[in-house]
Image (cartoon, rainbow over all chains, first blue to last red; front, side):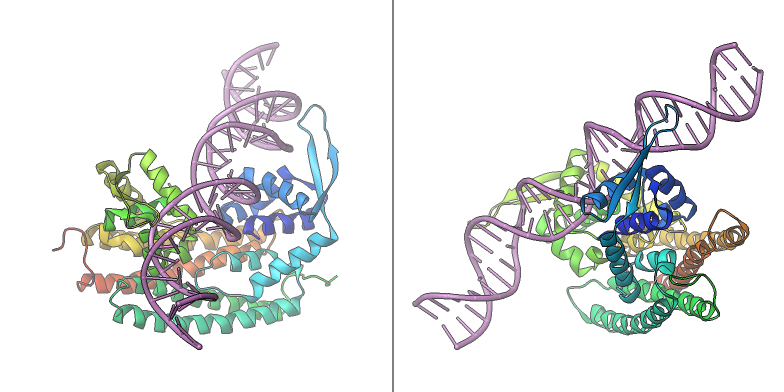
Length: 188
Length: 188
DNA sequence: TGGTTATTAGTCAAAGTTGACTAACGAAAG
DNA sequence: CTTTCGTTAGTCAACTTTGACTAATAACCA
């Protein structure tokens, strides 16, 4: 399932009952449109698709004056399950060239419990170390291979640089989470 | 113009006359399918679209035995201009959440001259510093704003972490480029 | 020598994305 | 007081992406 659907489903959960235009504004203030490349039109498409799949339901159609009608949506129990599954997938899995997973985690981590997020981040850090090591061997192979061009090493070097940066960020966040920053699922 | 089209156009330039399946294999050994999320089907679509726009032309249709026919393509003068324009755009412009531009630069820099790439990387480093500074002010604003949730700071922090990592990578590459590593346009 | 798998080369329907467009309303400016 | 501009709320046709599918040949292996 795509980032767009995860983002829209997560936002519906937080603001339900909610209509498309509200999500559009809200996602902009979170900068989600920036890092996930979500254009307005995609939000309405995601809402329709999520409804077809039974993850959200239409919970009303309001009309203020003669303005265009607003269809509002709410999450279903199946939607809650799917949302947690998608979020958990992003939290626990690290891929060498996936730049959106960690952004999704940063934006929606509070939908999981503090304990799970802390464990997940610790696991991400370990997994990142493993990928960094593997990137090093890939660079060696690239340089000694006759079919792979040498500059492919730059792609692995960039992956390594980014994963290191994300590790630094994750460590800083971990410390703040352990100190009690932010509010997570089941708190208050 | 999208990353897919840039990547396909750049690869056509390097291997012309070239058919879709060759590009598919070649882009895989460069890991382009990984960082640019390019599936096989997208390559054939990009080739058709680039032809319609006049950036490449069909330069033949080979048939070996009773295998499926292979349509081969070559770049046009208009394609060369457009390719340089797109590449230059990625080299000289930095955006806070754009993760593909620098990957494209790493993969296709040798299509520009060594001097331009060196100047462009120097400029990218300066521009990244500016965005990092601006991210800092954005975090301040986020924390003091009543409408923007506090965790949006994590998104800016991640942007800063990544830009720093890319700066480190660019500096290391710059040193090697100044020392003569790789072969660029107009060399040999 | 016959069967299975891998490689070559691509197509296509379904799904998702893009960004320009409509259309009503409120507020500000001249 | 009316024209202009921004905001609200969403649609839609054109385009791109996805990934499962076809269909032939080559390679392996018992």
